[in-house]
Length: 128
Image 1 (tube, rainbow, N blue to C red):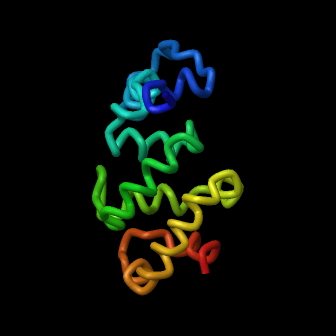
Image 2 (cartoon, helix red, strand yellow; image 1 turned 60 degrees about the horizontal axis):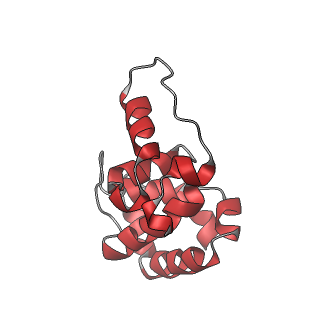
């Protein structure tokens, strides 16, 4: 089952200690080794922001956004939405189902997104 595997397994990533002690490095390193079904939404947001395992994490992120589009994961209302909106359109080409879900979410919440303080509006152009 896919959800029982880690990003490291699915992406064939060797998880070695790089000797850097920072929140991002520690969190990425730990998240890469967890099964998908055990990742926190913060770990999903961080890995997506780092463009790691996106094809596996995008469905998780989109489902979370369907539940609460502007949820605050770590820093501010909408930080998960921002991480997803900042993905290049090339990621969406392989994820048509999630693209369609996001398109509907964005279209039905466009004015709220436009007025949201922390959402990077430049990436909305891809969804208009």
